[in-house]
Amino acid sequence: MIKEKPSGKALVLSLCLADLRHEWLLSLCMVLAVASVLGPLLILFGLKFGTVETLRDRLIRDPRNCEIRPMSSRSYTQEWFAAMAGRADVAFITPYTRQLATSIDLYLPGQKEKALAVDAIPTNDNDPLVLENGGKIPSLAECLLTTPAAESLGAKAGDTIVLVARRITNGQFETGERKLTVAGVLPIRAGATKAAFVRLSLLEAIESYKDGMGVPAFGWKGELPRAYPAFSSMLIESGEPLGPELEFKIINNTGFTEQKKLASDQAVRLIGANPPSGSELYLLKTKGTPAGVTNIRSVQYMLAGKNAKLWPLVEDVTLTLDLPGEKKSDSLAVLPATSFAAKGENGLPDATPWNDDLSGTSPPSRLWRHVLVPREIAAALAGKETIAHLRVGDNSLAFSVTVEGADTVPPGMVKAPLRLLGIFGLLRDRPLIFDEIGNDFLLARRGYAGFRMYASTLDNVAGLKRYLEEQGISVTTEAERIDEVMSLDKYLSLIFWLIAFGSLVGGAACLLSNIYAGIERKRRDLAVLRLLGLSGGAFIRFPLYTAGFFALFGFLVAMVLFLCMATVINMLFGGHLQAGESLCRLAWWHPLAALGLTMAVSLFAGGLAAKRSIGIDPADALRND
Image 1 (cartoon, rainbow, N blue to C red):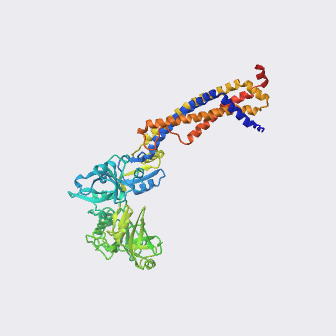
Image 2: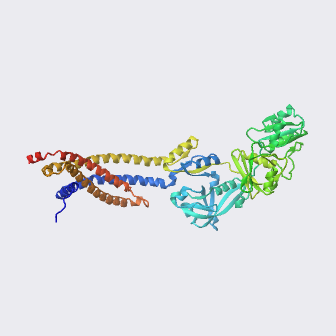
């Protein structure tokens, strides 16, 4: 059987392998030479990559490194928190109450004498400090304890504990208690202090209680922050001119600072009705602070004996009503439903069926949440209660209201009792809430004393710090620690590439000299092959194949050396590493990049040797021999 003659490429490859086997000792030395250059580089890069990535992973996994902490207390508005929460570089933000509210006591049932003082920390959905430490966000009836707090209390997940808020009111020591379920215990990494993570609403309730307020939802007694009427202006409807002297007094001693006369058509837009013919109309306005009950009483006292009516006003107020079928009415301008006479009594008018008691001393009633609307809107609601959506300036409020149709209400308008209208005026200056249980409007929180904030990534910490400091908010972060790790990565990379460059140059020179020397040793053999008809292309491939084999086998030996050394290094330093961490390791693409770089350097050396092999003249080689 006749063997098939190998092709040119296969012939050169077989000759190359035969040559490597023939000079196996020299080939082994070259493989080890490549491995001796590449192996230490892999170990050095593995240490650099493993060390920096371990430090970086620790920074990333610990959300405290992304935390931005305010250094002083100031007032932060709801709008500020909404704006910060909408930023892409903010992963989480929640308000913080005053320091007064964060101090609470905890004890296990039956162990009140062992009550433990802890700090209450607000939390909310998506809190990274809780979630990254394996905890769950507590509900209003739950809390999370740090390890020191749980150990001091002897509490564990699932236990019931009692929260105690303390205050002194009129010289009397008072306490408010609430039972909570321990939703979990956070590891020491989440905090080394004795603390309990609770919902922000619970912390707000504690703050209100310590401020002397009551918290009906928890059964904590105290006053409620009831809303009070506030008006931006007032219309005086007088049967006779007031006179220069009285006009001067009204705008200098009552809290009203501006006064101007109005025409009848101007008054209609303010009160929705035509004033009596011949009336003198004056519009009083405040500047800055709205007018309260005291200001109105002052004007009423000055107008004693005058045939005048007073119309407290709140301008630019719009209200929308829910209609059947998930529809909404158009925005309705809110006007006063009633006025009162300046009869000179030291007080405001008695409560009407709509409870126009501006002093707010009468108990809240559904009657004073009663508005007049055009007949067509009242017919659509058929006398049922509905939800009114109020907007004044930047604030809004939703509450239930009873409507009644009246022919005296022009289209596009709604008339409200004076007390309710005054509540609308207060909404312009501060947010309010409607307490459905107590059937009353309450003052809502204006702002918060601090915040808990976490950047979305480590790289965003420095930028957020600069942004807040530009707003005049002094904060502290772990930016310096983050910068140290980044700088370590930068300098280690520089050192590695300097060493790698020197090693690669030396390795390339070693390969080149060896392959070049091999070409010189084999001049006669190569000349004979050229006489036998081997093409010039074969002479190029021969040193390239040789260099490629040296690089491939040298890389494999270097990888074995790296794996062995990395295992030993990680075992030696295992006591300083956490689960899943390695001090010496490579990413999956690092070996591929190292192999590619090694092959490139080797083939470059082989190419230079190939250039020499092409230049061999067969006749000269035979003549020299």
